Length: 450
Ligand code: FES
Ligand SMILES: [Fe+2]
Image (cartoon, rainbow, N blue to C red; front, side):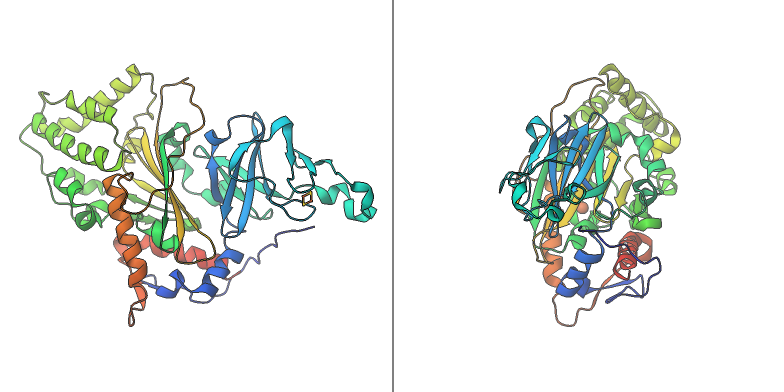
């Protein structure tokens, strides 16, 4: 029976290991042997976001999750139960299902010779069984090979390694920060993908720091009507388990230049939010803009504006039947913070909305990846929503992408080409702004060394 091996607990430095958090050797982004090592030592052992829960609302619904050369079927097997299987027939390895859909009649049927399984992975029909030696058709050995499954933040996570620590353990310390933001209740507003000519790590790293805002997305900074010191946007926290977050520096906020009065603050907020809403179509949505537009004639001191804006957002959402997170100061302070979830997933929540990213190696090429973006939002409580609609794969530069991700994608492919420059040795990281990237690599090393 195929079994994914267990890892040794201790680790020694693997090839191209990080020895200095300020430098990431360039080969980690294109070397074929390094890529192969990731495919053997990382993906089969790490928890990864396999699909959004809303993709499999009914019993029998499935999604194929593929990463590197692996393919996993995530199946809703009960109202409150989801299972995941290695996507290979126990006869001659044919992939049992592709893409997404529903297993009719609760049966998973191999397209080659028609062997069947129940949703729980037990064999239910072996056409031609009599022709096999009995020891070759032991029912125990014919069960689908199961992966570990966990759910969190509105998503299904899988781990092919059945001996790996639990999802709960692997996600620490993120749930206590992210759960109060109600990301689990958010649903898809739009969902698109792109194939990038870049290593998967390079792609996600472009979203792990914000001090590129000044140069890459100048319209956002101009929209806010002020200059953003690098520190303001990049209070980087690196955590255990390879996770990281980026929070706004509250000290800067406390000393920000205020306008003459509440009206001036409303104009500033509007300008910023319009640029984000137009440029991202996520995090700030038209409904939020409409609320702030209603505050343009507000009579209040400039320092009171922010609290009044929050009040107005809560009041509008509550009128629309949308339950925003509890407005305690810590939760509100986390609006706009972004969370990197090792190894390849991100959530960036704001005002009951969020943008979320996932990147995976695409094919056997270390220099290609498949990158998805979800815009998420809280809908009115009780509103029935169908499965999310995938808006397709769109190339770099396509106007199907809002301006902000388009600007980011351009950088990523240029970086990948730049890595091959003779004489260039390593990515150079700022400890204060980019340590989450170093943290990703150091934690990755702990897998590669096992
Ligand atoms: S390969 Fe699946 S039934 Fe033969
Ligand atoms: Fe960006």
